[in-house]
Image (cartoon, rainbow, N blue to C red; front, side, top):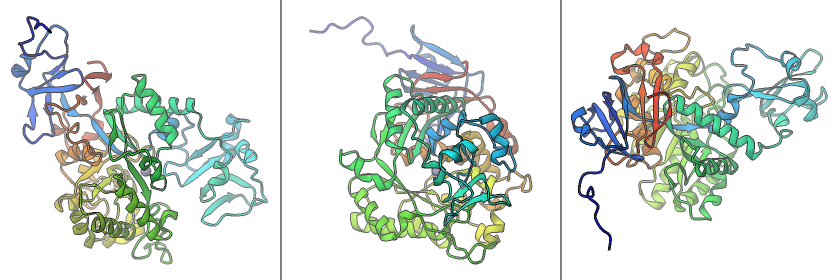
Length: 509
Ligand SMILES: [Zn+2]
């Protein structure tokens, strides 16, 4: 028979206390507090400094936050994490206006390189990469893409859209070691920005293997929800994986599809032609040829218990996806499936109600609005731009917003996203009061979309997304209390300390 030791009847003591903080919990039961007690990886109490002092014990770490703001860790609902990690150690050409291979050949020599533009719709190859891929002046042009050539038809090294695979097919897939290296770089970067969870869209299964190895070694300091391509839904279904299956560190159970392209490349699928390209209404993706094929696959994936998340940017692509989700709900009934439209950028006004009625989550990236907002109106015209990145309209229709970045398309920093959501101030400085200011949201709403909203999008709202007793102890201390700053100054705030599962993973406490 087990014997009781002397302490067994007293309350267990904390392993970590964060005190002297301005705690913003994102928990409506108790929005503000001063201190938090943690036992191992879970929050056990949230309250005043005096309340939390009762949890003090001998084996305990104490972080004095110095009065600074403590938030739940940020959860980025849409990233391409391994690509982002790999890019951290690639050539950075973001500041280069018009590169061609002549500019990089001198430094890259015989090493083949192929660097994508930030939006993934254009890339630069050096001479070594073109040689490897067998590209020369006689290489024929490609429908849907461009091989940029000089006056004597010599390729300059720049390849656009459908011409990019000419080079990609010559690049061997990343090795396991390269994926591990990229994942390590990505989790380190995420921790430095207060991002404690990410939802990785379109990972390869080899990426999941890299995460799995890091999780086993205790090195996975970002929690991952991996969402592979919808065309591969059977790979998960055949082993019985259902939505949000896995551990607190690594989950599967969703699929991601594409309905259309992007506004930047004029491939977003629209009801009406682009204002600056009157013969063009954009393009449906390969997966939508025909739309019934997409519907059939998603229908089966839903029946298998997988969550459905689909990229749709143009108003017509969004509308068609709502039709498909509607068909699935009609067939299988509503069972809290949490369909998500990724990006949901340019809405037809008539579709907000349907979006809400079908309980579809709007998984959006606020930074895109202040970036694309510089030129989107030229492409869409004023009337249509009105419901672009329409966060206020979504919230007013009771649609759940889940925020993220699409990193590496945009920077991973959530502070920039929050800043974008509350200011809508385009990067060119031309809209200091906000581009389409009607669609601004409050700071609390933006933080909620980046924490609870994103947690809901991965079925984890009971496990994370707020600083509440019982939840995982994922938290971040900022250098500034962004609630006390002018909106335009929010972007200057930085992360002081990131805590994941009760352990400091970034910064000095
Ligand atoms: Zn993406």
